[in-house]
Image (cartoon, chains in turn red, brown):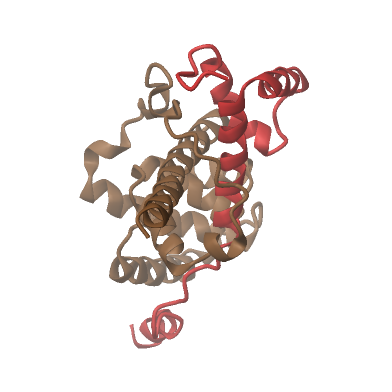
Length: 80
Length: 166
């Protein structure tokens, strides 16, 4: 695995990685990506960290509503 | 989506007011929640358009080449323990990374990966094609991965530096 690997050889696979981690890529593309991942350490890291990135955001609790945020729309409807 | 709490509150109010005014036009073809999200998203997008009119080019998804898709950081932070991944500092970095996305990518990412809408629902609410939603989601995810990888990689380097000079 060359440290200078610049993804020139595999850049055409990048566009499919998002669908791949969602399990929505077509079978032929999945096979091509998996074959490539077996030989390309950098791409494996990209796929793993891409998947982890999405999981982190999904696990993240939504921000709490601002104070008064729940009551404000109802009040404005009643008084407006 | 707006990155401004006060504006988000305004949009929330506008959404409920619009919904009350036009409840007769709700035909039940989509779920009530999808319908409300569509109203809210449209209200937020209107504000973003006023704020940054040039950021909503319809050519955005047809930009040539892969551009910012090309990864540059290959630090493998997948196996870091949860205790290091879910600190307040990491959450702040995650939030800043999303806020730094272009509006067109941020709205799709938030709807798909944070709000949990399907590709089809996101396309319906934003009035985009399925391929545009997929393309924007991919670009958003890759940009976020890049930034978080740089963040975790930098933190790891700093730890090593600290060890070295102790």
